[in-house]
Image 1 (cartoon, protein in one colour):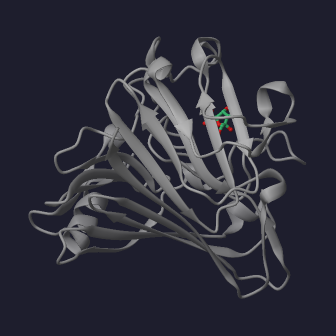
Image 2 (cartoon, protein in one colour; image 1 turned 180 degrees about the vertical axis):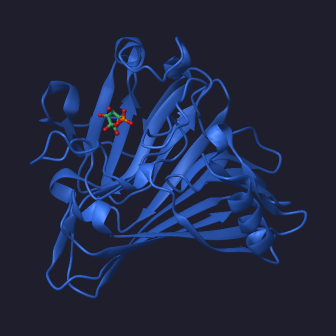
Image 3 (cartoon, protein in one colour; image 1 turned 90 degrees about the horizontal axis):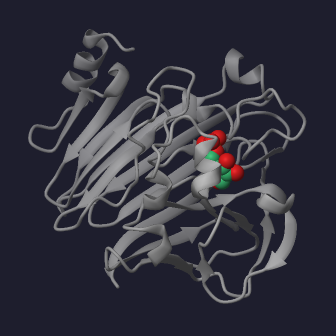
Length: 304
Ligand code: TA6
């Protein structure tokens, strides 16, 4: 999609020899490729979407579909899509793009910096314009700070640039790569109330770990605590710690759900599990004019 000169220009301005480059990704979409000593990662500027993260000495942590579409206007399947300013369908407009409009926009790269500890941090920006106002009549600035190291720290900051309060939903829709979904479960949600989307958002309460034995689409409410994907096949735990995030979503489409999605390979659903830090449904955030709100998720890989 992008011209080679646009990507070369970004690389001249932001590239860090031996640690970070801007390269043409699939479909020509610009990708920031990090090759620092602490971790390797790919971040697409289209959607500001982390596509890959591999801490030094560890296997790939993030699932990316081999059947994803790579075209403007279509979301990338896998990685860490940023959902904003609504989650799922827009309540008052079924024609609006699912999960909002920022995952299908090219974000501006604002900075790319290495640190003495081997980490690399990039900041991507996007803001309201006529195309966003057509869907959502608010003025905002989003700054997304991604710190790539042995841990992955994601900070999504929303600034209300308008003159009245804004209510919005947001989520870091993380697709974790798992060895085999049947051997994985999520801990950290015992006793938490959730809305089960597979049953019309019926409210239930979690008892014990979240075992995935069929299509699962649960939005856990009023929970700021850490959650872990415990993966018995890859013998590791993927831990997400959250700040200013009152909801955690757990999703796997299972065989039947994946079959309805054109961008999932036949058996790929067995190798992914989404655990998403956010503020969604009745946990939506409200921000006064001029105020800033930062959602943070910090992901680390631990032995099982
Ligand atoms: O986070 C769970 C969810 O909202 C599910 O309901 C599911 O459909 C998924 O996200 C993927 O949405 P997408 O629009 O990317 O197909």
